[in-house]
Image 1 (spheres, rainbow, N blue to C red):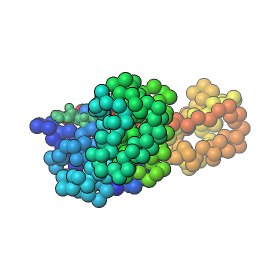
Image 2: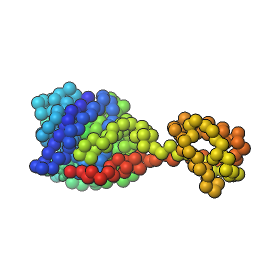
Image 3: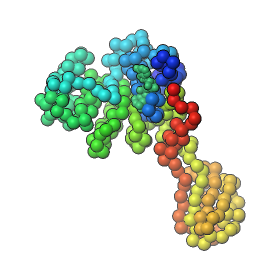
Image 4: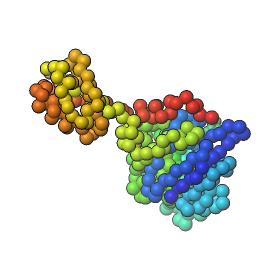
Amino acid sequence: MIRTEGLTRRFGDRLAVDGLTLEVREGEILGLLGPNGAGKTTTVRMLACLLAPTGGRAWVGGHEVGKEASAIRSTVGILTESPGFYKRLTLERNMRYFAELYGVPDPRSAVQRYLERLGLWDRRTDAVATLSKGLRQRLALARALVHEPKVLFLDEPTAGLDPESARDVRRFIAELADERRTILLCTHNLTEAEELCNRIAVLRTRLIALDRPAALKRRMSGSRVTVELGNPRPEFARDLGLPCVRAAELAGPTLQVEVADPERDVPALVRRLVELGAEIRAVARDERSLEDVYLELVGGNDAPA
Ligand SMILES: Nc1ncnc2c1ncn2[C@@H]1O[C@H](COP(=O)(O)OP(=O)(O)OP(=O)(O)O)[C@@H](O)[C@H]1O
Ligand SMILES: [Mg+2]
């Protein structure tokens, strides 16, 4: 649904996005993560035809960026970092304005549908200026959807929202994906990325990783298993004799074991320890959080341009 090939954007001497190649499938939520200045917003702006690439190519819904801008604009909905509205006009007037701009066939009912879905129908006759930040963010989402786009670009949709509003917005995003919409989600919230995204792209001017959240964690996870013993004895480390065990070390009541694949090897390790007469109090896998993985990925010396 979205495809980029070597997509690049320069601002003068500065490379903001360097040779980005990726694909987002229909109905997929792809998380775009990366430190400030990594090029996330620049990528979204290029794909939404708000900013011209300086290199590479991209397609959205089968239309080529730079060649079929108006077809792309009607295919995509975009939630920007700071959405602008006509603040003195009502929510309904603002929504109607955009619906008509996009040539929505029945603007009145489309506006009602999305104001209702975002819990804003009661506020429809209020001026946008009177909305709180979170309510304005919901209005921006309603506006991004009013022309029923198949592709959505959401740039930090829950930034600055209270926990409950953020959860509502996340649920709403999940519903949108259930409706087979394709979503590119820029976020700094790793829990949100893990919860919502089918895959995560980590960007730091260049693409540095692209995988499912669980696979990213597994790829980077330590293969260490920690066993707490009630009766620590040296032979528990010495006599394991399992092919999957690479190293084992006993320190006090704690046995640290390096295995090839923790997911597969823990049961065999536990069985073997029981055979040797070990009294096992606890077994823990050294599993890392997505945050650890992310920090390691972006923490290289190669700073963003
Ligand atoms: N219009 C512009 N003119 C010059 N430089 C720009 C422009 N827009 C973006 N940049 C630069 O491009 C780089 C990428 O910016 P971008 O806004 O895409 O980052 P981001 O990943 O969205 O960051 P954040 O997490 O802070 O939103 C930054 O160095 C930024 O300063
Ligand atoms: Mg940004």
